[in-house]
Length: 113
Length: 117
Image (cartoon, rainbow over all chains, first blue to last red):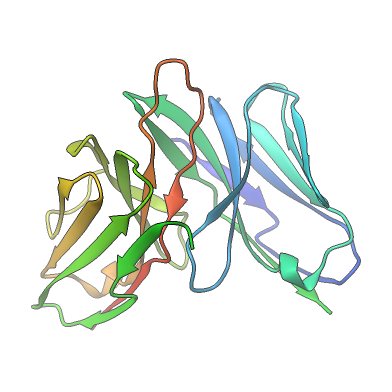
């Protein structure tokens, strides 16, 4: 069974602070995705990283895929209250024309104004 | 709005009831998924339909029965559930991958919050 461990599980910070969330797995995935989920909604895809060592930036969010394609990190600079939510990493494997996605344990972020 | 709708948004049912969850996607996708999200577990894949054919059944108990009558609609029929089945049930859709594609994007609905008494 593929398992993705995220750390920390919970994070409460002040507006303006920086933070990093980690996602670690013993398995190799064809790609790794990060989602954000807000209360009462489904997860929304933020980014997909495909190549080992890849770094992607989305405004104040920086995503990195490990060289071995087993781990990833999400760094948020100058966090805003709007960043509050559940962050999920997910490893994806292509399987017979569809994508099988294994989700991580999640990091619940609260940014206090 | 992700283009994936789910009804009902909230459902409370007894253990002897039969109910159905509905998912509809307006994105022209041809793969659809059911996931279960419990409070203390990662999001779990339950079923996958690709081109209206069930291609994945992740050891889900038979009291959950999926149905995909066409590529836009997906149902989850519920029968004789247990209190531990209380969770958020999420539907997602994506476009079937070609051999060249390495990734795709799954679009999730808002979920149905199910409580089993």
